[in-house]
Length: 253
Image 1 (tube, one colour):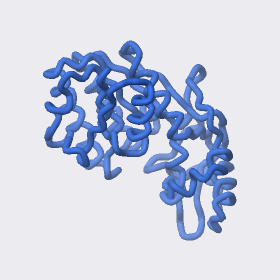
Image 2 (cartoon, rainbow, N blue to C red):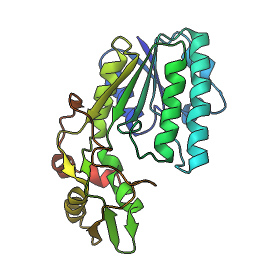
Image 3 (cartoon, rainbow, N blue to C red):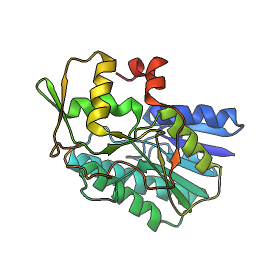
Image 4 (cartoon, rainbow, N blue to C red):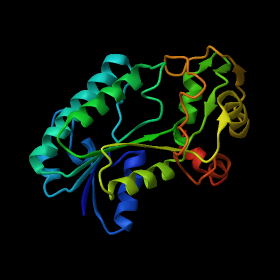
């Protein structure tokens, strides 16, 4: 089966292309690096020819409110229009656990807008909501840093390895369209402040993690369960400590 991966040269996309290829699929990486630009439409018609499935794991280069909304709405409209012309039978998009729950932030609002466009289109679809990637936790810490302190809310946190995300998205992509969503999360649940306290120690990072119930997560204060999946979610297999021990954390800096 021909599967086009939008954002196929990025973190999750490159893993997906590899895993799908190992299972005998024709997995095509599509990104500006390969001549495909969903914001302008460049290269879309060519790359989607004879594709049965499209997986969108692309991400906005900016989390600024106007920029992130423009990225997800414009790129998704262009992609869906090109898929309709090409006769694509399954659109799969990677999104984030918690987008539909208050309180929202600019990124979550943009992802909701993307999901609404997908659901309203004529193309059968599946949405995969994932928790925060292990590869992303250093950025979360940096975003929460104030001087030599990292301010974290004591809410639930269940990060997942990029490899586990790619496996989950790949399984959904080769199955029948859900016309709905599934959630995936890591195998372990933590308190966010405690996770980062242990993580910074493991990184050898001298910053102090401060528990702050009003600490913001990319612009909003998360509730107890904003960032974790509901019961029944699919769980990854890789634990954060094991992921660090095999040297993956050094590559995500």
